[in-house]
Image (cartoon, rainbow, N blue to C red):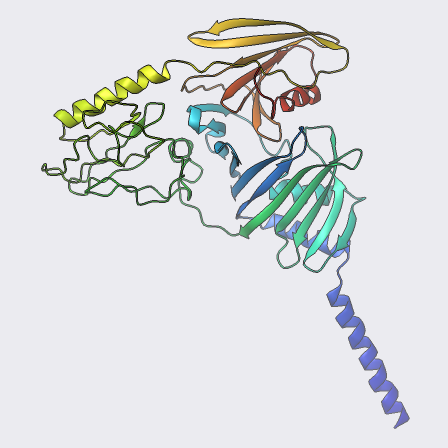
Length: 447
């Protein structure tokens, strides 16, 4: 009897050890499973917020990331306050940096992001954990927490903490710190799912340039056949017209943005200038995304800026739309005054030399020159709608946006912030210093 009691006690102890062992994981076992997750990774989609503390005031951005094996990426960065979006794509045609509201695109042949980490990409986070053999590991109720070396272009970022969901290793939270343990970047994921099924044009460059303002990409915005009203989800400050009715003929008419504020041929959401839907092509009313309209006249006078191309309506309605477009072009041709934005950071041993006003084609611009230990110029302009394609170059992560680096002996870093295009050119300024100068315009106001 006593022997039986000892056997039972020994079995209970063993069971308790097994149970407690299952409940607590060590860093080695988690890292091994993470490696397995990476090897089987096919796709994912995540959304969240990124907070930057690199400037005087914290800046917040909405982040959306998509990945499809083997190498398709889509990253959307939206300035939460200014509602300005920048999109980075990688597909079979190369790597693209898109600024849709300016109709500007840069194209590269690059291995990005394999050659540089990104704080909002799952691969970058997991690789930083796998590669750091001196990683620190803890856990809380819902997540495994790793403290590892940060491997980003910005040399001032030294370490990062990564919270991974215990259930599936999805990222929950990331904090990146400088050498003094000050948290400089925070990414919080509201949602993250593996095995996402994307529409075929999710990673298409043209689709992202024209459909960037849609809340749910890539669902198209549909125009009502009678009124042209939008039935798809759109951004509350849509910058581009996107879709059409045309249910009767099957042809597609699209509303094209021509600049400025307003709606198609006056007030409304896609009706023709006289509201005429009685012609034989009743479905031929193009839906037009509306901005802040002041144009209300049926003849198209006012500040209408988005015109409807309506098949069959070549009479007064067409003339009204044309007049509206003409008025809009005159309004937008008056370029906004360009205040000089001076970066609040200069490298040690550098002084501002002078400021020169000049013209780039029809655009006003200013150029700030700096000299000393390093020599560089900073060009600032407000570009009109244009498309630019530059093949040789690479992407430089500035945190609040992604810049484009071109050139060899003399490099030029180009980026857009708050409607202003900046071009930082230098022959000797290191990449880490270029990033600091670029980040120093964030939050600054033109003088």
